Length: 223
Image (cartoon, rainbow, N blue to C red; front, side, top):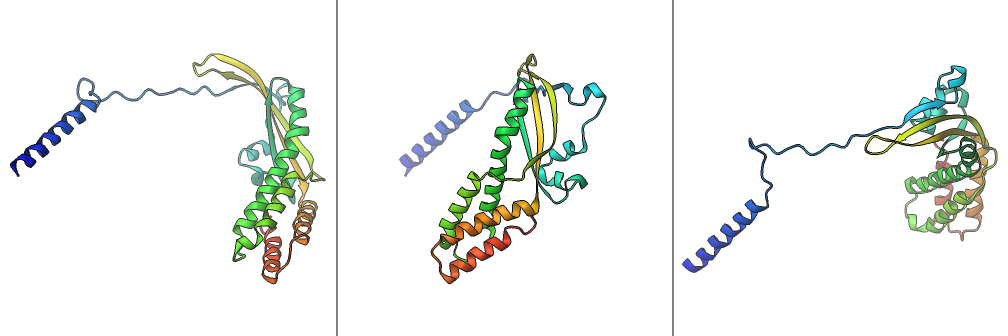
């Protein structure tokens, strides 16, 4: 018993020594120095679309920072489904074209397909395994669709000076922000066509049919 007790005491003593050795030594006065802080250098605005005309930012710019739903609450965009597109680059014309031709349709399709997926996830349809293939087909079709009727509602650009982590001037870039809109009824018809079109190719059971009908009905709630 004495031998076991001696071993335990020795183990505890060793652990204490190792623990003390691993602890960082405090600074003089018993206080550890604060961790170094990293200073951020946000981009500096050099010019924007309204600079030459003495115009300030439009109202939708503030709303766009909070997302498309905030833009939709503005009077000019009531009853529209809004998508906010942003693109950066060194040439203004090139950035505008990239945002219009490439980014807009991709962003639109991504937002709609995400909404389709979220609708399926939130729908109270009982056994979701019964409509799994239907969901996958709808999401895929929405992500690949070219929705017609979207148009650019407005655009703004700023020229920015960026900085390195050390605070030195780095690059000058243009940032283009566009808002695209489509009449909600027009978009509803196209999405409804996807939901019903994919449902038509599914093997039917009464329970599965009820689940698909419920998804189609719930999709536009709060739209």
